Image (cartoon, rainbow, N blue to C red; front, side):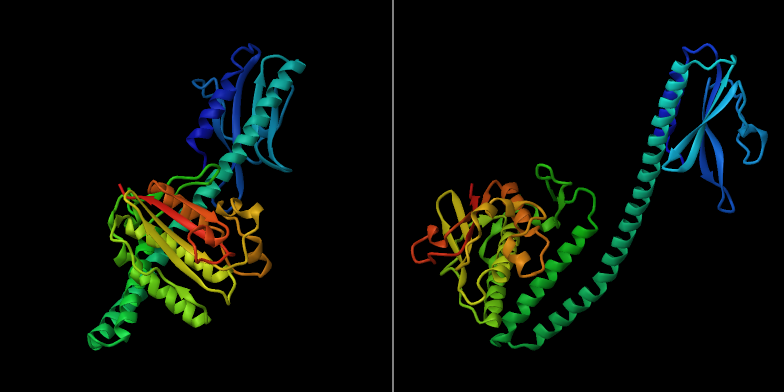
Length: 370
């Protein structure tokens, strides 16, 4: 297959020889597959365009035989010939300057054809990946819907005062969060996204619920997250210190919960497995501060800014062989900035407030309330 972009380049390259009166015709042929799997040179561009003097190249015919007034300059991809430039001249002499110009055009067309083939290969792979992703998302919705149905049935069987009811409600909330991420994997037109960071490869897609302009009460969003953190701490045998109360403010609740979920996951995974950790919060008239803190060890000074880059992981996690993608902090900071706020690292945690550990780390999220 030959793209229109490559055809335009061929026309441009060949037309540059209009000043050479001795040239009677130019033709570019590229190797394309034919039925049976073999390759055949097929004509894709000529000069002059209106003459129609050049015929298709036959693999065994006399057309490929050069002569004193006709030359074939190969297009190569490494050692493989991927095409040829046919040059017909009215003169027997081929000046060195003309030969160099022709060779330069051949080099340009060779590189362009290689890039054209690579672009087509990548586009085909991208299309296949998109189809595969859509199929996986479709198939994942079925078991997720079944889990949600079973959870709702289980919730109906529990009495209002049953202490297990809250756990089942939190489970249902987590299933709904998974469903939002499935929507982000196969987004509709106009889906929410975060702008690309400087030097990043592209924007990050987000579920529609994580649009930064969607403001809502904070407490209902954080209660399931705090319950999850308490359960994780209990399983690890750690002390978990939640805030004494949550401020009654209107913020992008889903975004805040997502940021804190990433920060808490990092704290449980990378901090001292025997030390306490918690969530601290403070609300003033025009801003909200939330921070996830732990009791150590402190992140090295040379890493304290670097770890906010996409794909960057701290030395501690790598040294211990802990799994991670290096995206959590980068995503959290991007989301905070999209809401008009910021995310920073404070060391030690006691910089937040008296009574917090004189060691460890604290990741503080700051958001405007206006």
